[in-house]
Every structure is written in structure tokens, then in C-alpha cells.
Image (cartoon, rainbow, N blue to C red; front, side):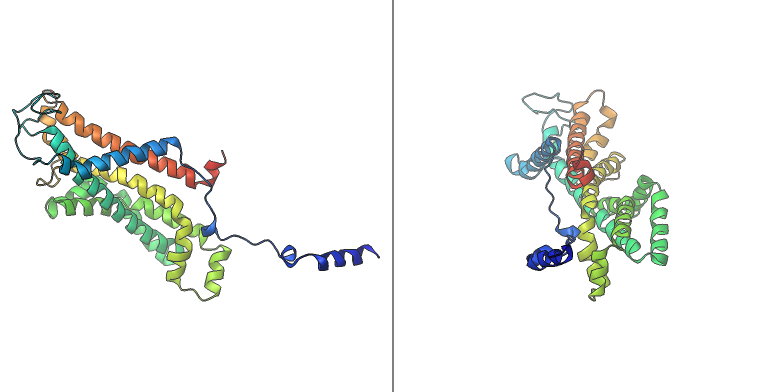
Length: 302
């Protein structure tokens, strides 16, 4: 028996699975064999503690944050006020607990709105290309060159300061980075084989955008959304510091802004809410960095 006959005999005797060509795995079905960094776990624990205090604090420590409960400028660690009182005599601990609710709510909802706008516009621009891409990118560039804080101040001033207007203003001015990232991901995936296969079997554009490409583009977008929460919290604090927050809702930015003139004689009224903002943004940043390391295969190989 010659070599050709021997090769044919071995191929015929091989099981069917051995004769199959290697199957390319769908990117959305790949398993992420990764684990979060200890810093990300610490950030999650820190953020969970802050959320627990902000949500459960009012039930454990019921009070009115605007109520005058002690003498003005009472120093911290006194019997009248554990964390002191501000220039009006409002308890800093009470305002800190209740202010966290508004600050965290605005930060989360504004970031969600920003990410929703950015993903929608970026997905359409990256998928359709051509004139649609050009028009949406010119719109993105227009919002990108606008002074974000100034534009948000104009929006809040025109529609009166409230939690709703502040949230909308932050979401409207902070979506450009997410849009550009989404566009880049869609440009990368729209020409791949699994997308062409979906199109060949008759899948519509909506299905390809939202159910085929978007799940594969999610890892960097999840990181971007996480970091957007911290940016929105800082944005809300800045608007409240300038007096453009909701005056009827206590927030950490409002605490700092209302006591900024008394920072030398009443430092605790500024330091404690400032520390709360710092640790919240730090926790969110640690989570974002951890997710970036976990979801980025190039970083996992290092």
C-alpha cells in the first residue's frame, strides 16, 4: 500500500469531528476567565458602604437636614453635634447623610443618560457610516468644543435649578466621549464575519446593532459608564457649589457651597462633604480601573 492510499484510509477512519475545520467562536460567547483586582474589590466595598449609609441612614438617624439643631459653628466631636454644625447651626452629620442621597442619585441618573445618548449616537455613526457618520460626528464635535460647565449653567438657569434640570444638564453635556468610543467599537466589528453572517441570513439593522455588535462592544463601554458616574458626581458638586443646585434638596455640593465663606472658622462643614465626594469618586474610579483590567484581554496577559 502506497502513501496516498494510507493517507486516504486514515482520513476515512477518523471520526467526523476530526475532519471538521476549526470553528470560530462568536466573540459575544467567549468566556471572560478573569478576576477583579484587589483595588477594585476595595472600591466596591467602599462604594457599598457609602450607598448603605445614604440609603439606610435616614431610617437609622431620622432628622430634617435643614433644621437648626445646635449653636452655629459648633466644633466636631461635641455632645450637641458629632461632626459639628455649620454657620446656621445645622447638624453636619445629618446633612452629610441626607446630602448623599441627592448627590448619588444625580450622579447615577446623569451618567445613565449620558451613556444612553452616547451609545445611541455612536452606534448609528459607526454602523451606517457615510453621511450619517459625518453628520453625527459634527454634532459630537459641536458639543465637545462647548464649555461643558458653562453650557450646563445656562441650561439650569433657564429652566430653574432642580434635581431634574441639573441631571438633564449633566447628561446632555457629557456624552461625547462615550459616543466616540462606541463609534470606534462599531467600526471595528461591523465588517467581521459574524456580522456579515447575521446580515446574510436576513437580520435587520436593528438586530445587528443592538443584539449582535453592541454585546461585543460592551466591555469598554461598561468601563466608560462606570467612570461617568464619578464625573457626574463632581459635575453636580460643582454646580451646587456655584449656587445652581436645587436649594430644596440637600447635597454635598450644596454643603460646600453654602459654607465656603466660613471655611476658616468652620472648616468641618466643608471638609466632611468634600471627603465624602473624594472617597465616592475614588471608589468609582477603582471599580472602573478594575473592570478595565478584567475586561481588556491585553492587560490580562501582562
